[in-house]
Structure formats: C-alpha cells, structure tokens
Image (cartoon, rainbow, N blue to C red; front, side):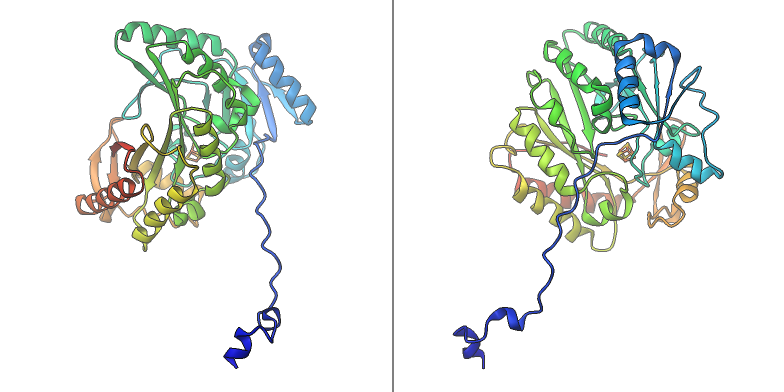
Length: 369
Ligand code: SF4
C-alpha cells in the first residue's frame, strides 16, 4: 500500500483532510482614542491645533479640561470600566515640569513627551506609577522639552547625555497623533553630545524611516517568550510585527536594540526563551544584527502595591506574584520590590546570555537587572 502512495497512484489530497488556508492575522491598527480632552492652552500650539483637526476628522468626541492632571468626569460605572475607558482616553496638554527624572540603567534622563499607554500589559509599572490617572497624556510644547534637553546636554558636556523617551509611555504607539518622536529624532541628529532612545511594542515606525537621525537615536523593540506575549501583553502587537518593524528601522540605519522584559520564570521557560532567540535570528534581515546591536535584559519584579493593583485590574491574570517565592530588594522609590531569588536570576541570566551570543556573536548586552 505504501508503495502505491509513493508512486502517486492515490492523490495525496484524498488522504489528507483539506484544511482551509490559514488566515493571515490582521495587522495591529494604529491607536484611535474614544474620547479626547484638550487643555485650552494646548490649542494655542500648532501641534494642539493639528491634533484637534485630526480628532474632528476621525469623528471622536472631545471635551475641554482645565488641567491634564485633573480629569475627574471620566465615563464608566465601575472602577474597572473607568480604567478601561481611561486607557482609550487621550488628554492633550502642556508639559509644565521641565525637570527631567533620572532613567537608570537605560539612559541619563527620561525625556517627557507622553504619559500613559493604551497597551494592557499586566505587569506594566505604569499601573502603580500613574495611580488614579491611567489616561494618556500627550504634550504639545515639544519645543520647551527640546530646549530643556539642550540645557542638560550642555551641562553634561564634554560627556554624551542620553535620553529615554519611553519611560512613562510607548511613544511609537502615539506617533501618528503627535509626531513628537520625529521632532526629538531630528533635533538629536544635530547634537554631537546628545543621544535618544526609546522602546516599543508597536510596529508603526514608517513615519520615522526617512528622518535624518545621524545614528543618534537607538530604537529598541520589546520582545518576549511566546507564553509572555500571549498571556500578559493584550492590546499591543504581535511578535512578527515587531520584528518586521525592527528590520525596517535597521535598514533605515538606526542603531537597533531588543529589550527582553520582563523575563518571566514559567514552566518551559528554557524552550520559550530559546525559541524566542532562534526565531529572532531567523527573522532578522541579513546585515541588521551585527556589531552595534544591543540587548537589555530585565527580570520580572513587582511591589506589594503593584500586586494589589494588578490583581484588581486583571483578576484572572496568570502573572505569578508570590512574595514567598521571591527575593526582597530595596527599591529606589522607598518601596521594596520582589525579584527572583539569586539561583533563578543566575539561571535566567546565564541561559539568555549564552543564547544571545550563540545567535548574535557581535551584539552587546547592556545590562541584566
Ligand atoms: Fe506598559 Fe509598555 Fe505595555 Fe504600554 S506597551 S502597557 S507602556 S508595558
């Protein structure tokens, strides 16, 4: 019987049940808020006006507010409903505080262009740092922010000063609305002592590809084991889309990086992270993963406050936050955080380091924390 098969007397299609062709998953659509608030002063700025026109064109309802820090009348019956609505609410205002926070270990300073994010990553630290204000604020006075950055660069001379634009948001996911990253990138291109960096889980980088950057902006993509992306990163993009976008920015000459964060200890973590790095190596176009490629590795951590907020907002989460299984570490903001015990940390670090150098021998690992 088998030789009949081999001689193709029985067409294979009769023997194998026909499956409908796999449907290509839909690309992640750029974010469109459901409700927008404007501070009146924001409309005095060209960017504020541009955003207002866009909001009207999209037919999105909008309201005026006195301050982006005081949005009190958000719709929604319950707290959890309000939270979901807040994550789809955009507030357009002015950045008043022009003193930048530190942003170790990724950069010297956090450069503020947006606060809040439409992603629903269960582990995200914005859950606690933004507290009762999870809505998304974008700032129209980018010129003031850039002038402040210039002062920091001058103060830091002759050393190079680095700025992280993704400390409090995922700015790539908002770029089609604000254009703020484009302004920062072109400003930094002419700053011999200034460097910009940001990280994203969104693939919408096309508007950045043709900009003058002089290699002064490093774009990193947040990647993770399939288990982590599937269970903990709703409302972001698929792994393949992030890789495709990474290929594009690398071909546009931007320094490229990947952040594996949070690294989560789970059943089958070795296979999961091993597969992540081999898929990454296979998918990246030739010439994009040589010298200059960087990796940043951040293990999962949480505070007691984060744990209670996360459990309330995502009650079915599979995120393991058992204090008994963790090691206490003193946090910079006076709150203890819980990381993996040394043995687990070392196993994760060693495994990932080995796999990274196996697939990307010329890449650098900036840090494991
Ligand atoms: Fe937080 Fe980044 Fe996820 Fe947005 S994409 S929710 S900033 S972890």
